[in-house]
Amino acid sequence: MQLQDILYSQGFGTRRICAGLVQQGRVAVREAGAAGDVVCTDATQEFDTRDLMLNVQGADWPYHAKAYLVLNKPAGFECSQKPSAHPSIYTLLPAPLRQRPNKSAMAGVQAIGRLDQDTTGLLLLSDDGQFIHRMSSPKKRMPKVYQVTTKHPVTTQQVERLLAGVVLDDDPKPVKAADCVQTGECRIDLTLTEGKYHQVKRMVAAVGNRVEGLHRSQIGALELPADLVPGQWRWLAAHELRLLQG
Ligand code: URA
Image 1: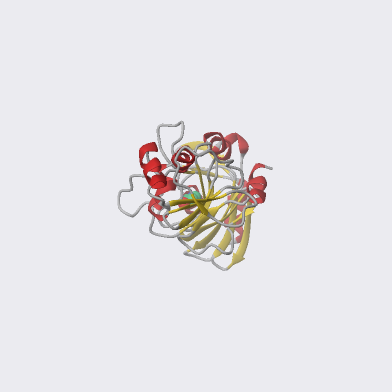
Image 2: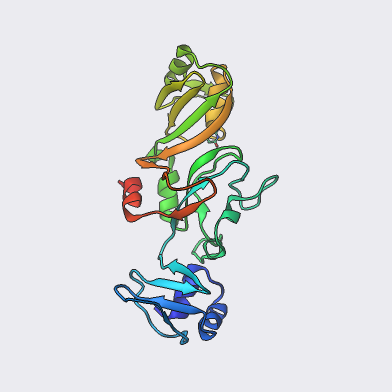
């Protein structure tokens, strides 16, 4: 693929901007197995994209045909592109990830499902429409684990009711937790396989308690990586992606 097209595909701007970056000597390339970066000033030069490392204006950028990211969402950020009262999680990502061209109307990566502004933890983002669809499809019943801190001590009866199913205001069909484990006086780990609006908060309220803190620790077999501090993101490793697709 031509270097200008590679940069364009990664979100570094229009093809013209990308060609300009190359011609100005701001792009170095390291092909798979090569020892060091080589500055390339020919925007039309072809490269094999497999394991290609770009360096654009001093910053390393591994080529990815599709983006699969994990973010440790901090409290105080909204998952919307157009947030109403708090900054958007998208401001935590570098510009190329927000600009990557794709076939859908929306450029850049998209959050897979939403967490409330005050919820923390594991959030996946991607620009692969099929992957987003698969991960968020209710049919897939992808389990998600939430660590819940409650206002009042959790009772055995509340745990039993969460497992048996509770009725939420917008749907007569009860929703059940796939699992609910009490981990402290005011703490439970709740596993859900649906993603209804404010589902954890509404389920906990329906059994007569109240959510004071909410953290998503796991999606499918993927746990929030321990090395990610709140606000930090990284590319998913191939084995992590397989855990989600398995
Ligand atoms: N359930 C909620 O109530 N809030 C979240 O952010 C996620 C699940």
